[in-house]
Structures are given as structure tokens and as C-alpha cells.
Length: 368
Image (tube, rainbow, N blue to C red; front, top):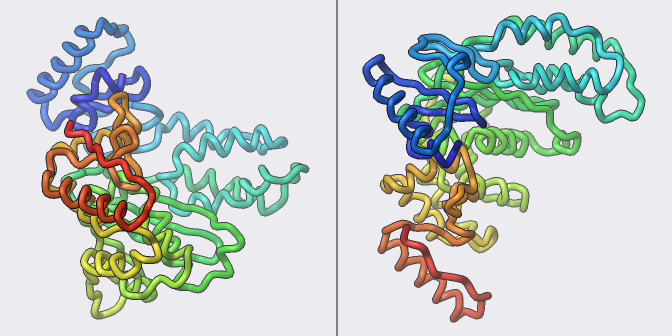
């Protein structure tokens, strides 16, 4: 289905297995989109059952979500099932409850922290229902009854990420125009508690960006935080392997840091400082400067933008393209499209590496 409907994906079609969702800004456009999809299905001799189809709706249920022009909401029938769920008496029953509520975790702020006493029971050999587990069980049910309507993401508009880090977990909100698009709550490992405040905030940001990379990789986004330590995120030298490896995950992303609190609320332009920092640290992280240049070239390359959108859904695809830390690859080789200047730089860099005695690097880059 991804291959057949590939020309329409993320433009006006979403598909999961055999469930197709067609979305449009108005009725006339919707008729055109619908005709295109039906023609494509007929072309590949794919058939639908009329009784399972619904056309020209302003509100519908799709994969357990209620989608409308207002946004995305949870399915009331699923919430009712959670509220009626009896107190788990075995690990299997508890896992079933967490599986059902976890499907809606993006609707619940700090879901991972609320559910932590329950997820801990899955790791123990002997199941023991404690008062802490009961409290978490009740609190999770209550949280499910107050889930908000999440805004539909608009990939032509900038995103805002709010992060919140405590000793026990990470909380974050992905927003557009002040409306939540998704929530993230995650408990952290015990050894992270020994890190400095700066390192904790740093890792929290990295985890959040990695989780929502498919939303954030297309244009500059804003990180909004009330932790002053993140003000120096792009200015300090990276002293540990953990910091250097984590910072590499921000390669190719454009962002700025803004304070939530304080009278100055000064924005820090992280894009230029990240580039400067990565050049300084290149000897340690083994990250060539041309990699950042290649990532930057995607911004003005329409073919690259289309591939990024498709690979965010399905990577690798049937044509051999894949996404690796923001880099587009074709059959495990870097892909640079028709950017001749970029090709020249990369080949020159590979040539210099070969002269310097480095291992052989393949430089045959496909053009399509």
C-alpha cells in the first residue's frame, strides 16, 4: 500500500496496512483527491468493500482516534474500556492495561512518570500489587478521562518544543501556535540521576528531539525551557563521549533556545553556534564538515524534501532509499541528487582521506 499510494502519502493520504485516510482542505479538492486514489487502486486491481467505506466526512474514527477539523482526540469507546478495566492480578493483565493506555500516551502529559510504578512490576519476577501501584493505576485512568484534543500538525509552520526534566523522568510538549500536537513522558534510568544538572537537561533535550525528529527536521524549531543551563547548550565544549555522541544527533537540525521565564527571554540562535561547535569538535567526533553542508543542501532541494517526507514514514523504501540520522542514503551510500557542487566537495574529501592513508571509501553516488 505504501508503494502503490507513494505519490500521495503525506500530501493528502495516510495509509496503515489496508486502512486508507484521504484528507483535503475543502470539498471540491476532496473530490479530486478521492478520484486520484480510486484510479490508482483500480490501476493496481485493488478493491474495497463499500460497507466499510465512508466518504466526505468532517469527523471520523481512524486507528482508534477521532479526527476532525478541530484536531485529533481519543476514541471514547476505548477510554470507557480503560475505566472499566479491573485491578490487574497478573503481569499479563497488567501488560494488557498498559498496552491499551500506552497507545494514547501522546495525549497524556508525563505518561511515563505516572505509569512508572506499574511498568516496574513488569520487571519483577513476583507480581505484587502495592498501594503505589494502585495509586498509579487510578491516576492513569483519571488522566485518560481528561485527554485534550491535539492539534493536527502543519509541516509548513514552525514547531515549538517545551521540555521539563526532573530526577525521575522527562516531560515534553510538542506545540504549534500554542496548541499541543503531542505529549511525551518518559522515566529515566537510575544511573542518569548521577549526572550533573547540565547533562540531565542536555540528555532530556536530545531524547525529545530524537523522538520527534520527523516533525522537526524540515525547518527551524524553537526549544522553550525554564532551565538556564540550556542557554549554554551550543557554546560549551563537549567534555565527555556521551555529550559528543548526543550532540551528533542534532546534526542537520535548525533550532533556537528561548526561556519560558525571566524578564529578558532572550532567544539564542543555536544554528550558527552548532555549526561552529561541530567544526571545533570534529577531531573528536570524527564528523566531517561536508556532512553538515550536505544536510543543509536538503533545505533547497525539492527532491530531497520529498524523499525526507516519504522516508519519515517508510525507511528503507522499495527503491533502496533510507534515512540515517537525517542523511539520505541510497543502497547504503550517501545520496546527493543533482547537487554537482556537493558531489565535487565529497569526492575531494574522499580523495584527501585516501591520500592520508584512511580506509577506502566508496564514492559512486547515484544521480536519481
